[in-house]
Amino acid sequence: MTTSTDGAAQTRPARLNGALVRFRTTAWITGVGLLVLCATMVVEYGFGNATPAAVYSPIHGVLYMIYLACSIDLAIKARWSIKSTILVLLAGCVPFVSFIVERRVTHRVQAGKDIF
Image (cartoon, rainbow, N blue to C red; front, side, top):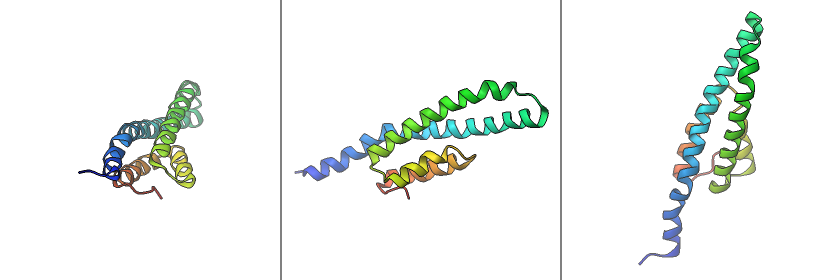
C-alpha cells in the first residue's frame, strides 16, 4: 500500500523533469550566446566594425529572455527561494557562469535540495 506522500515524492521528479531540461538547454544556449556577444564586442571596439554586434545583440536579448522564462518556470516548480531565483537569473549575465550554475542547479534539483 502506498501513502499519499509516496505518490508526491514519485511525481516530483516527473513534474520537474521537463522544466529542468528546458532550463539546462537555455542555460547552455545563453552561455554560448554570451560568449558570442563578447566576441562581437571585441570586433566592434577592437576593430571598429559594429555590424556583428548590431545584428547579434537583439538575438542575444531574445535568448536571454527565454532563459529568464525557463529559469522562473523551474524556480516556481522547484520552490526556490527568492535569493536563489535571482542569483540563477543573474548567472546568464556573466560569461561562463551560466555553465557553472547549470551544473549546480541540475545536481541540486535532482537531489531535491535548494540551490544556494
